[in-house]
Amino acid sequence: MRATPVAALAVAALLTPLAGCAQAGDTPTVADATAPSAVQVVLTKSGGIAGLADTVTVRPDGHWTRVDRSGASRTGQLTGPDLDKLRQLATDPRLASEATTTAPATMCADAFTYRLTVGETTSGYVDCPPQATPPAATGAVVELLNRVTG
Image (cartoon, rainbow, N blue to C red; front, side, top):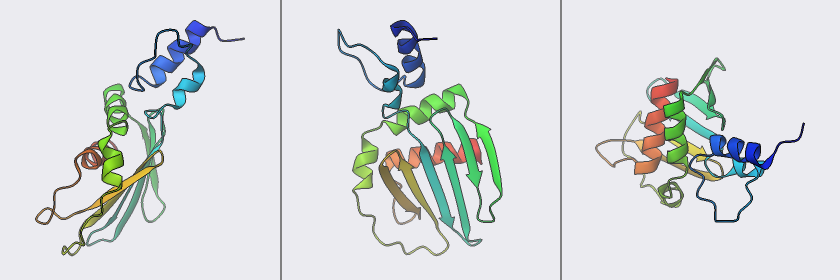
């Protein structure tokens, strides 16, 4: 069965609600579903007294997997509002800027280190509150993923 242009538009609209606006006369295609908001997100949390090494991977459809240092895993599905928020944060232009910023060396012992990859963009920080504030966009994604997959 062949998809009609209207069906392709509906699929693209559902998968990438924040991907941007089309120009008048543009012909939407299913390929539009690969826009920036439809990317895989990977968060790695390491460090701390216990020596954590957790990785959360969120697929573009909102399915997530959390794997700890022992290899144990849990899975789940983001709710609609949480997936919408993640898509919004994934398209935040501050992420690219934060990825190019060099963080100062930390003086904290046993702090958590976060590494966030959104598509091709990787940013991160060391959670050392007295020293520095986490980068805004990266910190917002970390907070969301810790809340919904923790």
